[in-house]
Length: 104
Image 1 (cartoon, rainbow, N blue to C red):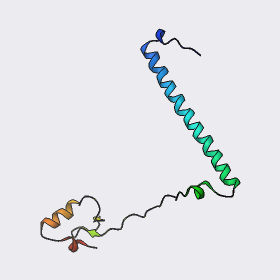
Image 2: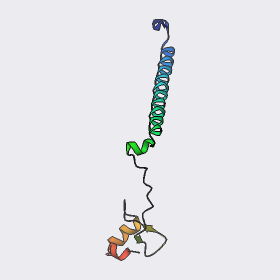
Image 3: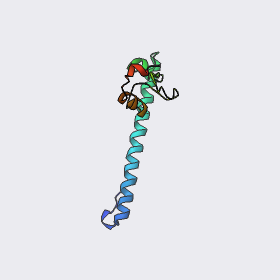
Image 4: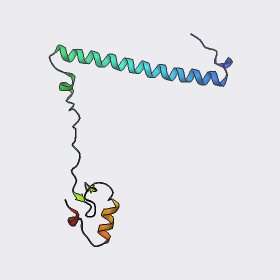
């Protein structure tokens, strides 16, 4: 298939470019899926799962960090001690309290 690029307008060339990009992405994705299916089939033929052979560990789910500090004026405002200090913690520290004073 030969396309006369010289006869196409700029808009047509850009559209063609976008279509080619999508076609390449779809082709690569399809080939990866085929390869993965073939490898999984081989692993099953030998009595293993692919994750057992590759040694991939499932993503570990973390539980939320527990609250360590509370606002003395409003105990419903808490902070885990991670990230930026909340304003109430900054104000307490400026007033002379320590983080130990704010522990739950």
